[in-house]
Length: 226
Picture (cartoon, rainbow, N blue to C red):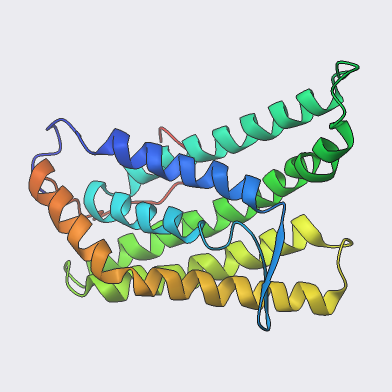
């Protein structure tokens, strides 16, 4: 472990990108998309980037710093859902005729956000733990195996929980099964395709920050500040 007291200049930037992707993914998830045989919510194509940013955070700064960002993302998702709901139930100005449109699209957000929080916490937590443990076990070698392996575990939990909580009862079970499979395949494929870029970003951040944390002896407590 190198000097961890050095100022984390890239950490706020990566945190902002990470949280921004989470929030925007929840908005886009209100629309269902079909491309050929694949059915998925609109946030599916963007959401994998949160795992890419999460991989960079854990790989460079370690599990404890990534855990703080995970909780920040959870808080912002809950805050967004609360505000969407609050604005939805407030009385509309009489000349504003889009209340029904708002309810049809954005009032799905509280349920989607709840599903996203549950799936995201399970998936991102497991993704961080698997990547962190594999880094120690491999002595920092084979980054591609760590990022892809952790994604396979994290996205599986995330996808099953998200689809179940967000859409159960709204769509027939065959559609939900197709959606879950499509989401999982797309998310893992996107992260695998971006592996070369992940390598470059990780190398750049490690070099600029002078940090390369190994979580030896980490207990992986999911709670912040412990």
